[in-house]
Length: 262
Image 1: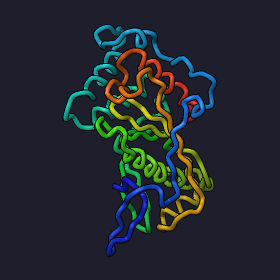
Image 2: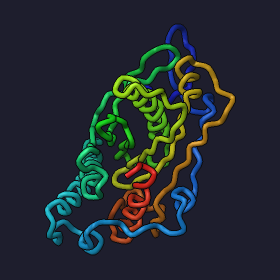
Image 3: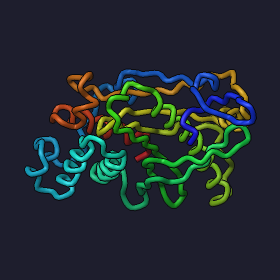
């Protein structure tokens, strides 16, 4: 999989290292600056999800299921499917998926790098019908000890470039519309149950440079933010426990809806 998208020639093989050679930068910003708000909105969820810590205290089955899936992500040596399962259920509870918006896992995306096709798979994505457009990407990573590493961030950016091309192909085939020349792909890296929110600008120029293995002079500035939880150093291990973390995280998910187009 094309995790990182700087081409380096070694014999006749291409390998991938970092984003810098494509002039792609990763920039953390304040949550309110990221969302363009003066304050985060109250999450549109049932109050019991904000007031009750454990699944046993929930009246709604889907709330209990969400917390049980949350707890499964904490089991040592479990694989990343636990994070994926939790994210899909979270999107259902928060209204990210409904009617014509569906969550897909392990969907194929082709990334063209240096004239070669590199197959990738989404961990989770939200697809909007009937246009069949990817409107949100999620990169899952349950390895909390690697939470400070940027590898999953670069993976998300690579998949955003692939999603840009896929969306344009379906615009042409499904509707006869011209290719978009630029867009912003919303993305999330889920480290356990702790999200990092991304806005990834992708242009036809950037896609063309990556496709041909050339280097764009223009900077692509990706911005991201962390939820403003009370104890940031513990956020990766705590996730949506305790309740004050859960409220801040769900407020960010609520604010993110506008960027996704929900």
